[in-house]
Amino acid sequence: MTTPQDLLFVALDVPADRPVEQGDLSLALAAAELLDLLVAQVVTLRDEQVVPVSGHLTGDPMLDKAAASLIRTEPYESAEDWLWRRGDGLSAAYRDELEHTEPSGSGLRQLFRRADRSVDRIDSEARRHAADRWARHEPLLVGLAAALGIEEPDHEETAAAAGHAEGDKSGKDDSVDDRVAVVLAALGEALTELEAVRQRRRIEEDAFDNVWRAP
Image 1 (tube, one colour):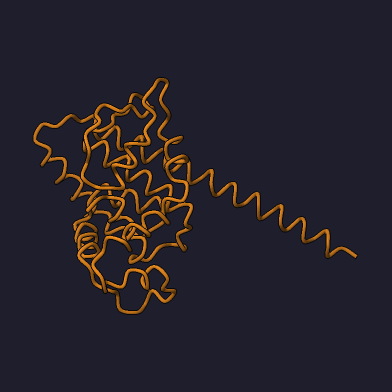
Image 2 (tube, rainbow, N blue to C red; image 1 turned 45 degrees about the vertical axis):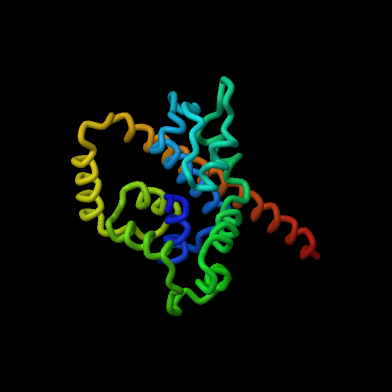
């Protein structure tokens, strides 16, 4: 399972401060892909630029599609530009991929269309993996979910989990954490920009309605 797949299930199963918009989820899934590609050493970040460093396959069809779409000539593209380009329609693409790959009878199609979040959840290996990772307060997943307004686990437990992850790195380059911070910051900026676009559209629509309502 991948971070984007796990994030998709968390977005479905965990209460959020507000309903998760599909555009927001698409941007977050693109950020999750970028983080997984960083971990797989398919890309690195040079300042905020996404730089391909390897052409090897990850073994996951969606991540491999993401890697194949990388810009491989200078000046490359910024992490935020990647989120906008790769994120276009990405939540629907992941939904379709999971519906196609999950075992017959898992009920994912009904799950994605279900409006009542209080009913019993359909079980699947993919969902159990995501739930386990969320229960362990895995820092990458928690950070991505928080950007979407999804309720975080207890802050102290999350901090402890992050510290545990630091202790388990066994001498890994600390700059990995810096690159994660760059991706999450780019996601925050993109989400803020998308919400600003929505607000402008609402204002324009309200103004248009008022013109027609005027005597």
